[in-house]
Length: 306
Ligand SMILES: NC(=O)c1ccc[n+]([C@@H]2O[C@H](COP(=O)([O-])OP(=O)(O)OC[C@H]3O[C@@H](n4cnc5c(N)ncnc54)[C@H](OP(=O)(O)O)[C@@H]3O)[C@@H](O)[C@H]2O)c1
Image 1: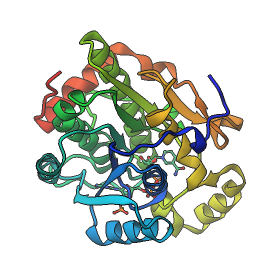
Image 2: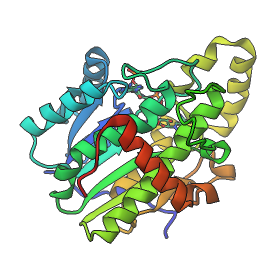
Image 3: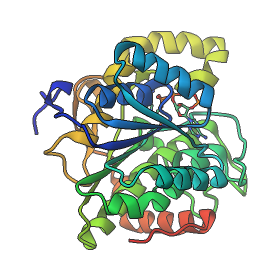
């Protein structure tokens, strides 16, 4: 597959509806800007209206014709997810792309409104619940795609199915983030298998942005040693506008296949051009994927209608 894919390869997206979670900042913001520049209708699914409006205004400075819409979504609150879905369905009749991008990283232990440990609750369970409730509309849209966002960190991830949300203790900020990013891959591959088995006209893909300069590290920046490390790491990192390209390529490259994983081409996939990459063996474990699917349905109380 070509490593020369660029934004210029994207065709006109007029008539396409694209939902981007966490669109007000970092990679989600940059992806929204690209989609809007190609004339798509972009729905910014953000938890803060103020930040979303600010992001829309910034995009409109460069592109006054951008077709942007805000619908409130807090992935840490099942009620908010349900309300997002209701509002979306009352306004739009199809979904061409769902980019499940929002996320938090290495935060201290806390729980969502529904009592789920925060990182796995928002990064995985929130997107699982959102995707399940939008699935009928995505399914009925021709050539639709779902793109999840993982990370190099999935390689350190492991899942204890008897303690997925650290109900029995043992929480670690990095451990939990890595678990959530491994979950994003397991969820993608299981959904891709189900879509294929049921011959649904849809692609399910996943991407990671390498190491990108965004707001994600906001919790680590408080510590002086971490700040020094981050500044050293800037050599290995890339701008958010580059880091978003694997996400955008996964969502739009006509040659991409369901189950593909995109990331940067460079050293240890930290930065570079958007290309097809490989996730680790654990992420392809079918038994783990099925277990994660089942516990995700149990926790959220939401089932996919496939
Ligand atoms: N940056 C990297 O190097 C890197 C590396 C690997 C993977 N990733 C992944 O890339 C994705 C995007 O992160 P980013 O780097 O662009 O970070 P970011 O700049 O911090 O953006 C994260 C976005 O997610 C939103 N968000 C957080 N919690 C939410 C919730 N409960 N409901 C709805 N939205 C929520 C944030 O909204 P607020 O502004 O309201 O907080 C923000 O818009 C994440 O999934 C992350 O794991 C990033």
